[in-house]
Length: 113
Image 1 (spheres, rainbow, N blue to C red):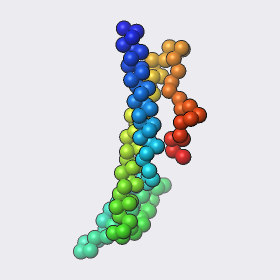
Image 2: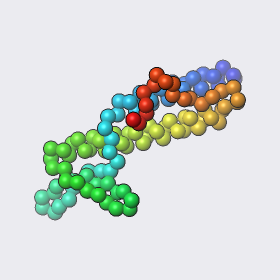
Image 3: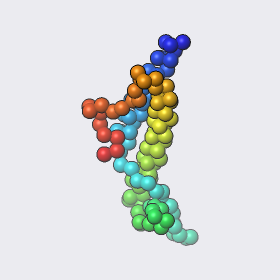
Image 4: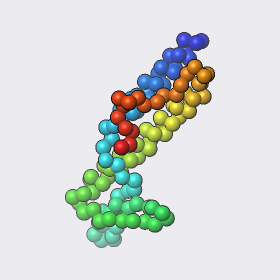
């Protein structure tokens, strides 16, 4: 039984390392979404709700794909952080004074900066 627990903990730690690597490869992120405005001639805008106010910038066709990519990267970032949170909560729950939660080492790249 102890071997099964150790194996499961090792599996969770490996998954955390994989997720950390995915974070490092995400690229630029922007919270918000691309919307199209107009009835006859729809135009792409980037929309962001901040402080209960909607901010929009006109994208044009040239910047639309880039803005969509940044927005998708943000959604992936949130998914990764959620999974990492669940794993770290499980690791903390199994902490029996001799085990410590996964922490970044000095050689690991910064997560968000």
